[in-house]
Length: 447
Image (cartoon, rainbow, N blue to C red):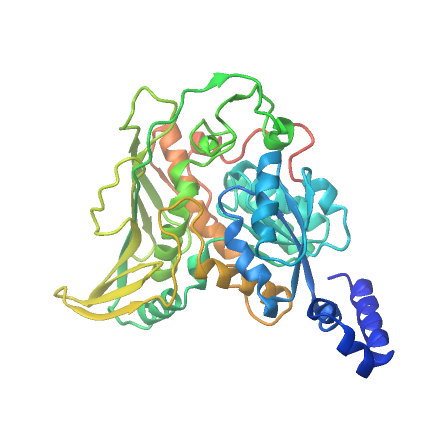
């Protein structure tokens, strides 16, 4: 929060309290009273992107103890703005302003933080713009569209010294944090391997057909940092994930981010030494889905540790007994952990402990949301106030995000490759050609 505004609010609050406290409090509504008490500590926020994730932020924003005001809702599609205004209005006793262009919000000095839930190609450029404007950022996964943006978003955070929380909310799970700590303390012996998995039954995707943008969509702003092209049906409504690489990061960036992060956390590793990928499109061969819908990836790390990814987007068979999660193997046992808790097994495979989460969090449903998201949001606010350390600071989240970028690059060049485990750079010139991307002129983040 701007120091001058904090001082002004504090002085205003004290002056107001001093003018007849005993008589005025009785006449005040609870809403007015809350506008005075703690006003100097209030965090003003905006949400950019009103698709499937923004609703998971509202619980933490609306909680009285958060002392947060949602000043703006922002989206490039008018009907999403209108729907969100109604939905948010059911949770709050005031109406946020509606705005199409995030740049107008960034100019508002009263806004302290931005929640970014846009398509992937906006994440790093938008976060960098926000930090340059003096805002803290809650950045949904993936935190970057490519490896270079990983470097950029971390560099911007360090330069502008802003609080940046990555939206991989399982890092705020009490149960996940506890079992990972137990693994680090040797509860399954030496942890040497993790299998991260995901299975979903996504259906057929329409073929792209050039058409006029739908009514109410600002197509130019949707594209933002991406090179300009004609609109194709039905790009804006989630299918941007599967229509090439201008906007999305395929299922790796979309969902593998979460489980690979838990795997890396549990094994206590950073960058791998080698990446091996098999991926292909196996379902609805004639539809508009333009990349793999099934992937197996193996990452070999220093110390003979391995992470495997097993992801199937369009066949919902749950080969591991659940739709998503992470299995960690150790010399004396194993653990399976997901958003609902964990199960601990001895070396013979006997269940010796089971811990369920105290709340619910979306698994495969679009948007997810639940108690983990709320806890993650509150942790972000507490991080801004200096009361807690972030559970997923951007420099940590970006390392996990690199695993998804390695796999996507390997698929795109049809090669496996070695990695410098110290720097994360790839020892392959074809792979390094995809380290960054092409930007619409004027949109590339620059320090």
